[in-house]
Length: 134
Image (cartoon, rainbow, N blue to C red):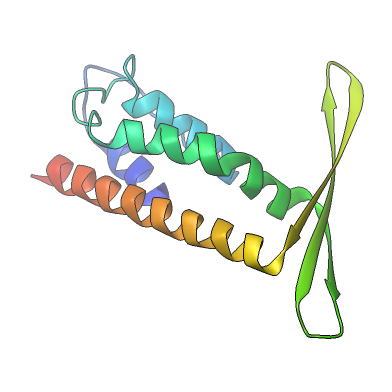
């Protein structure tokens, strides 16, 4: 994703400027703005944008939990583990606390989904970069 943002930032597209912010969540926003329907690279990004939007819709909350939540791992007598993820966010100046509990099989399914959607998105973004280079 970052490589794609860098490639877009050096390309010319109708005077549109691509933001290059530091945090990964911000980079998702910046890429969506650049290749989205109203972005300066809407035409070039029309194949990748739906995959990016789908990835963000399905994975962004989980990514934020993993990056910003307080995580505990509990292991039972049989060696199976359970993740407990606590989060605290601020919405309209009020604290919003959350708890997500994932057992090992459930976490495995989430990981498989994350990998599959991430690989599809990476492939489409790679195609976009190659098209921009030519």
